[in-house]
Image 1 (spheres, rainbow, N blue to C red):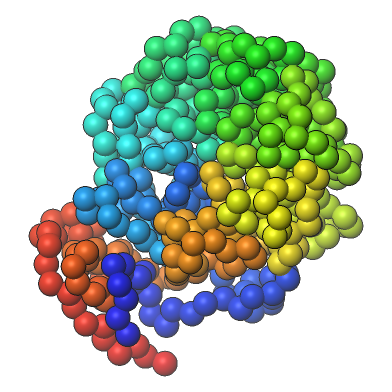
Image 2 (image 1 turned 120 degrees about the horizontal axis):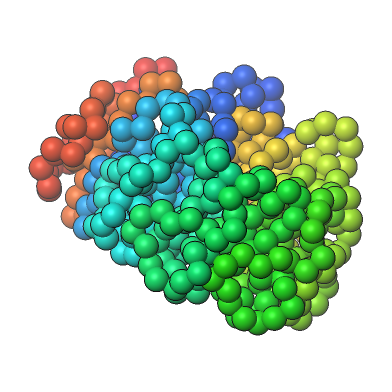
Length: 441
């Protein structure tokens, strides 16, 4: 069977997972362990059995697979990021770049580097992971989808950021871009988690929410439309904050189990039944308790709510902009939380700009929303997908993508044979297409 303009993963006996409202016993027994999922503008990355994989649009090398192919390449199923090994702790996606936290506490980034978001002291793009300069002893990477900046929390408690800084999102008191990590002013201890949005950053500090960067839509939550190049206290959120989600022009948080949002509400992303903007945190309709995780795309938000004992009682609810079915409903937008079908037993979220993903019982990933760049990882480029659909899981036999056979003017096939990262990088461009060998039953 021949495929146009993409080469699938090097699998033996590749199969699609069955669809169900909750993960089946067969799914849980066969799927690899999924630690985390993170969505970028038009691509996604995840950690499977300790290794980093990415899929979707590969412009600027944002998938980290070692090739770019003149910005015409889409990878429709998870492909291994080269050179990172199998001891990854976290992966974080920006708009056009991504970073990974290794088990030794160092960070490597790949993809677009126009504003220094790879943190290696240059503005050169990289098709493969490169080390962030001078950064070690990192505890965690910032959660969320930034535009062109990254942040990290060090074991010492210091928060550092690098990359684009037009709105002060690096938090160091300036609006100067930085190609290497800079310290965020005042965040030196008691920091629990760091979050990033399009041009905004936030942190939970001893249970309190603090934000910095763009405030033009009230997304800093401090009662003003002003931006700030240093952290400011979110009004009223001085304790009890356990999770946050930063969108394009709005911000949300879980406070003592309840979901609250602030900033622009023009697409219903504040979830309070209106399209109004709020300069202060307001209660999301109906989500007053048992909210476990929250994540935001550009103008939509999703949350996991536990309705009974254990993860199997978890439900997925989303609200806000639904132009590409990223909320999972049939309306243009949802002003209050909408219960998403086929996403029960969710344990962890990972939204992209206009798509959403969830991990089911720590094993199965399902994604939905915009898929024009194959960012859902379901093996197609169907433009929009309204129902959470299983990401094609990596298999133990996956060794590398054979990308040398890809050319826009020919039909491309999958080649099921071991290929090393070195051979991929050294492949001549272009070369002819190859045929697919028969697969064993």
